[in-house]
Amino acid sequence: MKIKILTLFPDMFNGFLSESIIKRAIDNNVVDVEIIDYRIYSNDKHNHVDDTPCGGGAGMVIRCDVIDRAIKANCGDSSYICLMTPQGERYNEEITKELAKKDEIVLICGHYEGFDERVRGYVDRELSIGDYVLTGGEIPAMAISDSVIRLLDNAIKEESYKDDSYFNGLLEYPQYTRPVEYNGKTVPEVLLNGNHKLINEYRLKESLRKTYLRRPDLLENRVLTKEEERLLNEIKKEEM
Image (cartoon, rainbow, N blue to C red):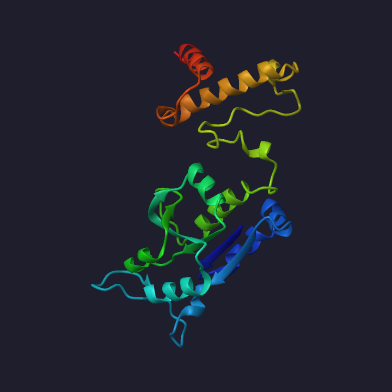
């Protein structure tokens, strides 16, 4: 996969691309990440990419002609172009899975007061990582890139993410490690007995419990299996 990130602040990505799983995925040719400073597509002698808002108002607005030239220079027929904006649809795991299947995604980072409205006509999708405003789109672009890269083949082992929160529509079950006892708190016995059938049932039940207590909205549209229905009924009685 190819990921291109269009930004005015390319140095913000230095640490992100040079550490941990992301660096390993790049080194192993799982993904190619290209950071593009779209300031070079300004036709202004001072490389301005923004201008004052028409009609007046505070701040500066990123020009549509600059973004248009940047897209034309860096995107092809296989490019899936996403605009980082707080006005976009809320990013989630299902969108992550969609993006992970693309050959090339392009993430455009805004700044200042945002983009000229006409920029929206040049992109395939607008994405937001939450109902709040950041100083720019760089952090959302990192978050989206990270979530996509970890799903790519050979980035991490499949078993490392298939039980993650949201991947299967539920929050992840509780995890424990050694020491078995610490400050009077112990690892649940079921996880120590080696009975994998009971362990799997425990994990499913606790995953359902966390989801029921913390994010019941995730269960509203979920089609439950008979086992999940049984376990969820047990949970509701236990939590009464």
